Length: 78
View 1 (tube, rainbow, N blue to C red):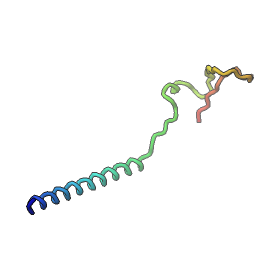
View 2 (spheres, rainbow, N blue to C red):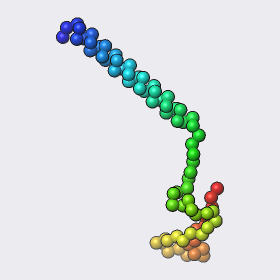
View 3 (tube, rainbow, N blue to C red):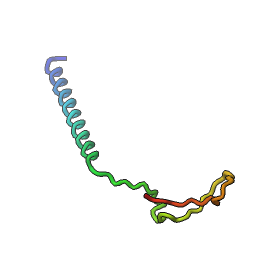
View 4 (cartoon, one colour):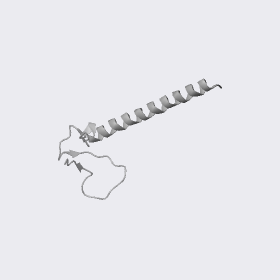
């Protein structure tokens, strides 16, 4: 290898390293910008959107239980 090919190799290597750090910087900047935005928190399952708070739901359980509440579940949303 002559000196010109070694110089060309190191120049291309420096370009790749510089582009890598620029990409990492821009990705971290956009990631931190996403963390600064307020997040919409919806803890309601999509199938439960139409169920109002306080409604009684029918629940199927394969285990036999000896309690008096007939297996009904009451939904309470906060």
